[in-house]
Image (cartoon, rainbow, N blue to C red; front, side, top):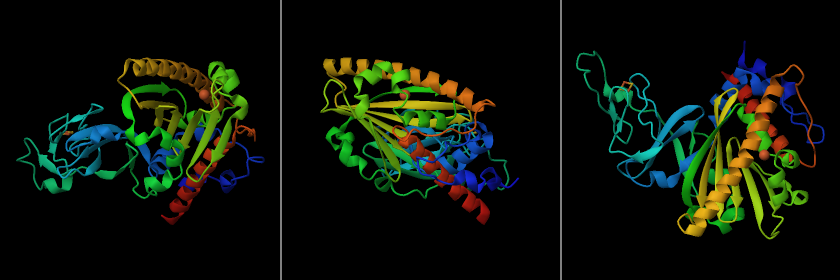
Length: 363
Ligand code: FES
Ligand SMILES: [Fe+2]
């Protein structure tokens, strides 16, 4: 079967919100679409890995997952940011299994091959009798990495627009928060039994607030909830009930990064597909103050509340995945008032699938 037969042209047409249908259920349940999502959509876009302070100096490292593959970022002897697949060239072992730390060189955890921080293979125990083996052929595979406002991202495909272009306009909205000066606090991870797009769709609308998150719905001024869409991202925002001069901002940067901004706090979500129907959702918390007793109390309350809301989302997303898999559903429609963000995401996804079809035809 030719790859692009997965995408009949009629499925990739972008209709205006008022006339559009939601994307077909097979896109959430069929492994073949999942493979395109990882190997093309994720591969060609930027993906959040973690706080840049974990790779501040030579030998610092941070690990993560990009497009489904393990990656490791470090700084070489010259202080340059480097990213590699966290995959040894001997038989695929991991170079690091911790989230972050400090090393002098990279050493595979399986049989101990070592690599310099520049990715070149250094030491190969007990290989004297192997014929025609040239260490120069077995250096680590690099990938593109960059830093924006204290956060590290990777772009495995290497051809995405620079981070400044992708994030253009976000800086101004969040500048009162001074994201580059926030301190990293901690990470929470949740495994959700749904396709990554179910989780993203759910994030992109406030329509479900009254029924799924009654407590959050009371805290925000639901009637003033707004959605704005841009080239590479969308923004939802709403004032707080108690103090309308403060707002909650929810940015979604295609395909998988979310910035949830409250006064003094930035929570980043990275949506990491594990399999077609399993998604890991990472929550990284940054605050303007992480050490005073008052700040610690605030952090505890903030994360307790976020955890409750997250479990509400997990429960509904898992039900939705089950529904999408059923014989009873293929496509739905959008609420023009409240689902512009979901429609925008699905348009960007179709744009990527169109590029995929175009490129497949050229091969
Ligand atoms: S897999 Fe890395 S040393 Fe064997
Ligand atoms: Fe939600």
